[in-house]
Length: 507
Image (cartoon, rainbow, N blue to C red; front, side):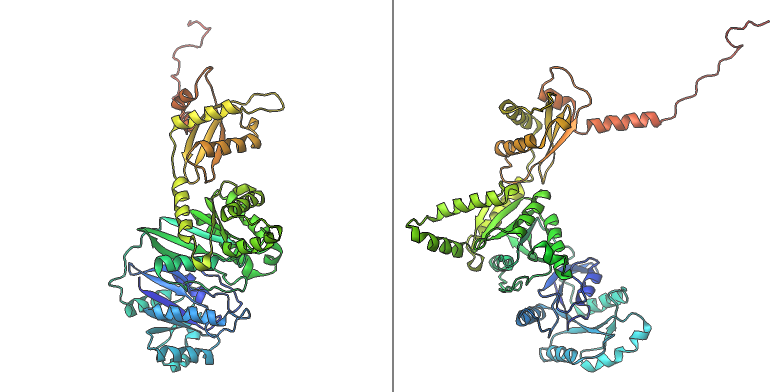
């Protein structure tokens, strides 16, 4: 796809313009300068052809977290890859020295560009556009990202300045979305860059810094792995709740991370092995479990953690080997993140790319596992076996009965149990059954959804297979709908009786 980069000084509305053009809230928009740091890229369709629209950080912004050079490097990478640069200026602020510096850079490097004056909310603002002509990068186009003013005209100008003849008319839907989540400074961006370098040859896809909270947006990185199109989503690091309540940017960043989990097919929960599991780790684990997403617990900085552990234990004279250390850490994670005790654990060192490809292989395995469908006959055989091992019981003495089971959905695998009374199957027994189903069915590493439904009628002595064959999923709903239609249908009028009323004789 041709690349169109959006460049300008801080707070001129670059992120607002990207969101307005694509019609989605992709980049975080805030009045605070310097919110965008990384390159945020999204496909955008013009005249039936797709281009890649790239938002960048504010050029010349002095970042308080010492990330100024990192942000500048990302902007320069975007400009270097771009077929066209949209140079954004602020119509309300007028011409500034920072605008002149950017214009000079574009002219020196002979970068093809279109000058866009944002915040031109009406014809009166258009009268101020003449001042920007002095920048020497063409006639400015007055637009308003907030009010959707002249965006169609801007799209037409872009189409004239970019060769769209070879641009794709459609882009393949990614087969899998992988969200990388974790607390701040766990190494998420480093892992994304390592993956991008392995499969796309781009090692500087996102900013990596020792400063916690470097990433703010959710960044989609598209790649090809063995003929499969994947999207890896880098997300902002999660902090403790009290910090998010006092900072709007971190609040929005956290909710972008949650949205990334919801739209992901597989989640990589990154754990910093050099630190104890913390509140953000447990909070993310809980949210992933609630969303029933397949997840890989990725233990990062493992080489450094091993060195620390061995130095601590050398005094005792016993130094465990790698396998023993990994087993101990798995048991530790099972105790800390109990709601994800079924998830596979991978040990990596993202800075050196160790075991990173194996993590993606595991993610693909979970993706396939969550989409398996089991026949009703096989499922009922497993249910019978589970019931033989342990039958549900209640303190009241009422006997719960499970008549049959069937799978109704995949991703996550959703299994319906038709029972006499759903209230009698308590949560403890449901957890036991889910764990046994995970052991007996080909779903050992993914979440399983268990649904309980009452059966309207039952036949004495009926087997599970006979029940399943007689009462398919949805039968109750179909019968109820048929009954409703019958009741709603107007009844024919009864024929009027001719002759005298009963009990009388004609004279």
